[in-house]
Amino acid sequence: MSTSAKTSPHDALAFLTANHKALLAMFRDYEQHKGHATPVEKGKAALRLCHCLSIHCAIKEEIFHPAIVAALGKKADAMLAEARVQLGVVRELIATIERTSATDAAFDPTVKVLGEDARRHFESEENELFPLLRHAGFDRAGTGERLATRQAELSTAPPGKPVFREARRVLGG
Image (cartoon, rainbow, N blue to C red; front, top):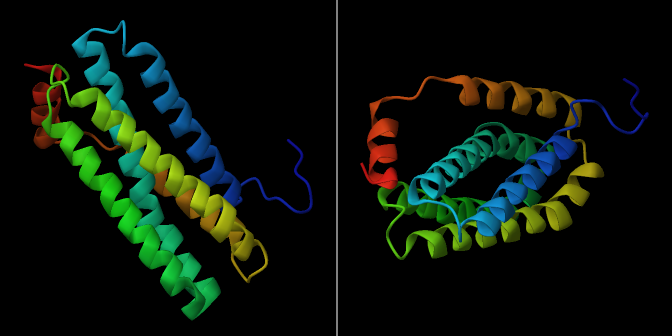
């Protein structure tokens, strides 16, 4: 596999952009199929989405945000404050979906609002923050490698009992 001189195979910004695209594709698929999906199918798709988005939020908070502070110093404070608020809203919506049955009338609108909030956050990050990081002393390769490793760890961790309780609630069992 060849890479250009400007981009490492573990470039953090490319990695996060690819995650953003994959998550937004999952939201689009949900919206396209919700009309003819059973509550169980919708519940499974929404829980999968919530799980992937939760992992994305976790790796940003654990790895990406500290790397931003290291690269930008005080300039990062305002941007990260806004990002933390946005991620907090996303986490609240995820928790709401995980507590709601897929047969509830509010289920689909909540998933839609989650997708819209995530999209706005991703766009803000890609259009405002990423350009700053490209021109700063940001370790794109090292951060990208840490992001990918942590995402793999979280993605393959066995679920605990609370996850099964939430799934039963969403799936109506």
